[in-house]
Structure formats: structure tokens, C-alpha cells
Image 1: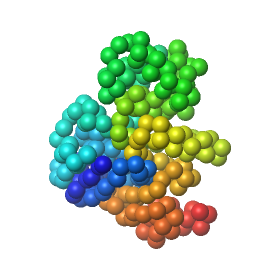
Image 2: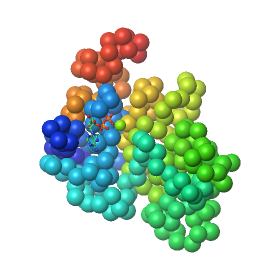
Image 3: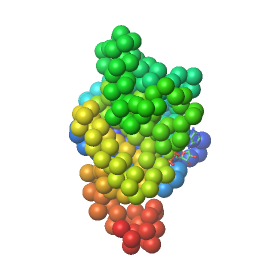
Amino acid sequence: MLKGVHLTKSFGGLKAISSLDFEVDKGEIVGLIGPNGSGKTTLFNLISGFYRPEKGHLYFKGIEITRKSPYAIARLGIGRTFQIVRPLPNFTLLENVRTAVLYGRSGIHNTKEAASRAEEILGISGLLEKKDQYPLNLALEDRKRLEIARALAMDPDLLLLDEVFAGLNEKEIEKAVAFTFEIKYRFDLTIFMVEHVMKAIMGACNRIIVLHHGAKIAEGMPEEVAHHPKVISAYLGSQYAERL
Ligand SMILES: Nc1ncnc2c1ncn2[C@@H]1O[C@H](COP(=O)(O)OP(=O)(O)O)[C@@H](O)[C@H]1O
Ligand SMILES: [Mg+2]
């Protein structure tokens, strides 16, 4: 579904992504982890066309997307959330999601039909009761849900989730994992997710890719990756690894 070959992206002298090769297969939930500043958001910006790599290639469903615009990439079926949420502030939640329906891939061009689709998606996202509120009045958790709702409304095949589960307690993490599975099956998605909450990533993902200084240092099933010595020293710290 998604393939990166020798991807490199620098900012000045800093290689944020360094000769990275990776793949995400159809139907997978792949986790992307790594310390702060390891290049996770930069990789999502490359995939979604917000940044262009200096070197390397990106393919989505067999089509080269390396130099395509964000608009064209979204049209092909890659949806994303932003780590720093980006709602349309003067629109209600319903209007935010309806806009995404109208400009997305659903083929819906009638505002009434779009509003009813938007309500359905707000319902799945747990925001239906707040549909007439404005995004800036929401708590962070709900703003993150709105990011997901807007991405889902575009009707993507591949969804990139960038730290959408920040600041949750144990119980909420379980719900978040269940929610990830629910949207995957309901929307027939492939999911590539960045998450700091280790429990969420371990529970939701069938495969994990670990970045450190823009390079892949490990990849595999959650348990394998958690006990990988490079990961422990680079990212988790030995104390954390012992608790897993
Ligand atoms: N637009 C930018 N301009 C300059 N440096 C950037 C920019 N975006 C990211 N970086 C740098 O690239 C590195 C990777 O950042 P980022 O991809 O945001 O990391 P992560 O999401 O893993 O925390 C960091 O050192 C960061 O400071
Ligand atoms: Mg980030």
C-alpha cells in the first residue's frame, strides 16, 4: 500500500530522515515510534506531500507520489491528522467534518447528504453531542477526535495518525485501542500511527517501526521491538523496558 525507498529529508545540516526504507501493507496497523525529534512527524509530512525529500521515492498503491502536492495525495487516498491540531476555527464541528466530506473522496456534493455523513462520523468519533460547538472550546482530547473525524470524512484508504492519544489514562487507552480497530474495520483502512503511549501502540499494532535520528533502528512485532537492545538504549531506557 505504501513504500518508501532511501528517503532523505534535511533541515539545514540536520538529517531529519536519513536514507529510510519502509513498507506498510494493505490492512496493517503499523506503529511508528522513536524519541522526540527522531523524525516521525517529518516522515508523515513527506508521505502526505507537505515536505519533499531531497532523495528517495515514495509509492502509494503502486503510484509514485514523491513530488505530488498534498491535495493530490489526499485525493489518491492518504488521510492524516496533525500533531498540532488544525481545525477550521470559525466552523462548528459539524461544519468542519461536512467540509471534509465535500472536499474528500466520498463523491458526495450535496450539503444535506454531506451533513448526514458528517453526523455519522461525529457519532463514531464520540462527538455527536458537541456537533454545534466550535473547536476552540473543546478539550484537547476532543480536538484530537475532531482531527480523526475530519481525516475519516475524506474517505482515505491509508490513515496517518500523529499522536492522537496523548494524555489518556489506562482505561481511556483501552478505549482508544478499541476505537482504532473499530475505524479500521468500518472504513476498511490501513493505519500508520505515531504514538507515545506505549500501551496503545503495543495493543493496536501488528508491526512497529522504530526511528532514531531519522534512521530505522528496529522493526518487528511489538514484543520483539520492545526487547530489542537498540530500542531499549535509544528510546525506552532500560528501566522502562524491564516494566514491559
Ligand atoms: N520545519 C522544520 N524546520 C527545521 N527543523 C525541523 C522542521 N521540522 C522538524 N525539524 C527537526 O527535524 C527533527 C525531527 O523532527 P520531527 O519529525 O518533528 O520529530 P518527531 O515527530 O519524531 O518528534 C527535529 O530535530 C526537528 O527539530
Ligand atoms: Mg512529532
